[in-house]
Image 1 (cartoon, rainbow, N blue to C red):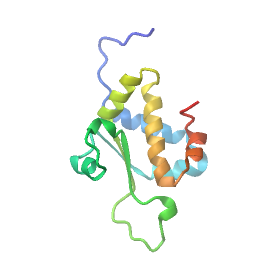
Image 2: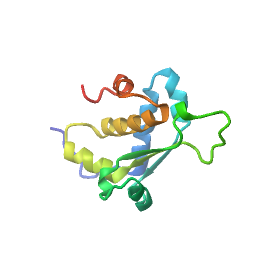
Image 3: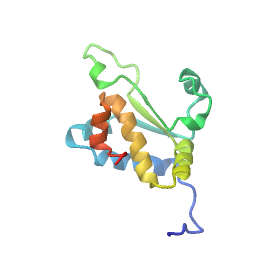
Length: 136
């Protein structure tokens, strides 16, 4: 069993961001460029307004969120009011990672990020499984 060095610190927002950006590099070519254009925000928790809108009482229940218009629903006549963005919520991700105890932090961040990208691309569960074989 690998021991964590005594000098280790908790994964910060920048590490979560880097792990998500590393996940973009693993995407198939048609999606890699488009995924890189989605804004990525890493925050400790979702804002209370977001949780209320989603009717979520426990902020630890939300690990990620896509905010934007999915590609299949976009029109060339639409004027975007804000960029498409993905939020990753660090403390809920870290809590799930600790509770699971059977996946690396990179695997979990990739899974959450790919799931949120699926909303952007309009992917089905089968599409997601081809890119993120989480359940294998």
